[in-house]
Length: 236
Image (cartoon, rainbow, N blue to C red; front, side, top):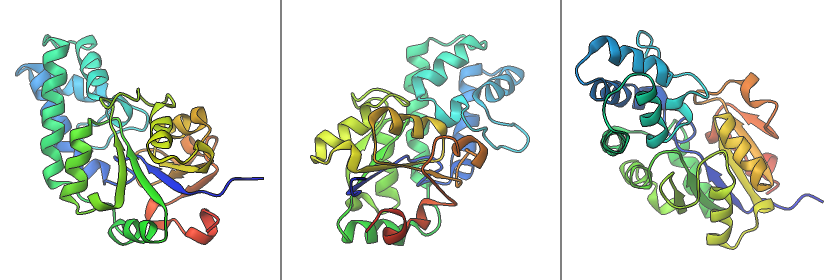
C-alpha cells in the first residue's frame, strides 16, 4: 500500500524560480569573469555551460541547469579558464547570490505554497545552488515562512543526484522518505528522489527539462508546481 504524502521537497531553479529570465545575466557574468576579458573564450564557456549565447536559453541537464558552482568552475577550467578553481567557485557563488535580489517565483506559486503549508504539508527546498542563495531567493519572494528545510550543494547533504538532500529532509522533519514527494524540472531531481526512495516523483515542465527527459523517471508530470492539486496528486 502506498504511503500518504506528508512533505514536499522542491527543486529551486525552474521549479520555484523562472530559470532563463533569472539566470541568463548571472551566467553571462560568470563566463565573462572566468574568461578574464577574452570575449571569444567567454562565449565558449557559456556554450560549455549549456547556455545558447544568442537565445540566452539553457539546455536541460547542462552544467548551468544541473551543476553547482564547484562543478561549473571545474567545467570552465576544463574549457580554458585560467582562474584557480577555488577562486572561481567563490566568485560564482557570489554572482549567483546577487542574482537572487531580482528573482521571482513562477506564476501561481505565491498562492499555492502557503496553501500547501496551511493544509499540513511540510515544505523544503533542495537545490544545486548554495544555501545562502536559496535563503535569499525565499526571502526576496516572500515565501521563507512556508519552508521548514533548505539544502544547497554546500549544506553537507551531498549533491544531486545522490539521495542525501532527501535523506536530510527526512531526518530534519521526522517524515520518512516514502512519505516525501520530490518536485523538479530536471532528471537529476528525479534521480535523487529515486535514489532516496521518495514516495512520489513529480516532474515539472516549467524549467529546462522536457517531457521526453522526465517521463521515464517521473510518477507524474505537471506543467508547473503551481498545478499541484492536493486531492488529485498527493492523495489528500
